[in-house]
Length: 105
Image 1 (cartoon, rainbow, N blue to C red):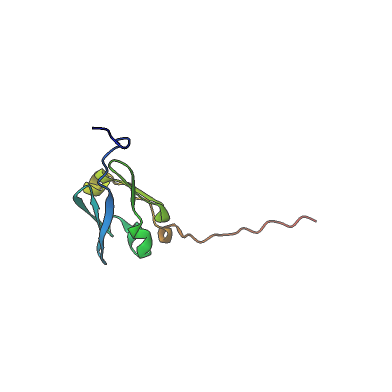
Image 2: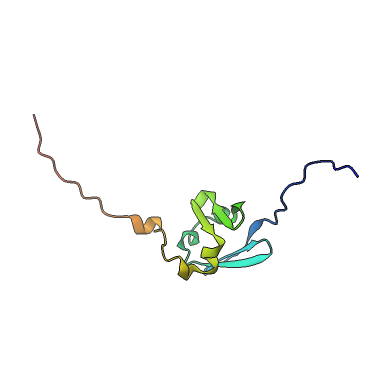
């Protein structure tokens, strides 16, 4: 039997299954993951189309390009093992204090 094309990797894909006020459910290769807004704050208040736009560039890795969020499935399954959490834009806002420079003529 002759094959009509190259065989490639079987990819089951990923998709956002549900968005709620509490978090986001993502299906990856038949497994469901919950991203609680308390532990994954980047999705709270984000546009629905940006949250739905998830991709898996490699096994065990999820990316939301419009939100600039990259997560490994291990960090979703066991967030307590990954204590470093990036700050959201709201946390990064700081008052900018300008100092007056002496004028030189």
